[in-house]
Length: 98
Length: 93
Image 1 (cartoon, rainbow over the protein chains, first blue to last red):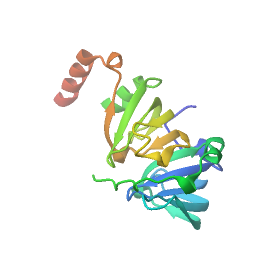
Image 2 (tube, rainbow over the protein chains, first blue to last red):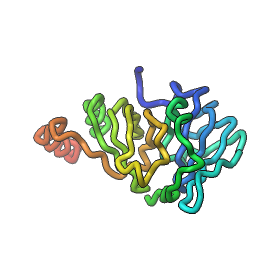
Image 3 (cartoon, chains in turn orange, yellow):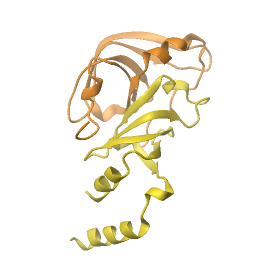
Image 4 (tube, one colour):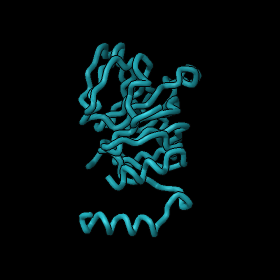
């Protein structure tokens, strides 16, 4: 691939976004720009807690402002389907402190 | 510009990127851009038991603005060359 680490290779794929406030949003990447603003379709949030397994909140079509994005991960659906998120317990991620 | 060029030379090496939310991700450096956004391949989170959030992620894009440290392979660093380059940059030429 030429150029920098753009997100074009991830368009129409399922991605996992970690935001600066520590949230984890999973959805299909529909668009992005220079500032890493992102359009996600069919998205849901995975809420981590130590008291119960991961809760999935349906969000639908979402735009996330680039400022607020830490990581955009390509979700490997094969691995993801083998994981039982409803039994996974963990602290929510810490917010980013600049 | 100096560090952009520098990171471009490290493409293909194994690095650990520590983020400003304390997450550390290890992987092969795939690419870097002008904002020092980083793309890693074959990633794994350093403390997976504590941070299972990215268990199903193997390739990821990290926004340059949230990077705290990049741990480099010692053999990938030519300290003398970096010294010279940073001094030249500091002199403005």
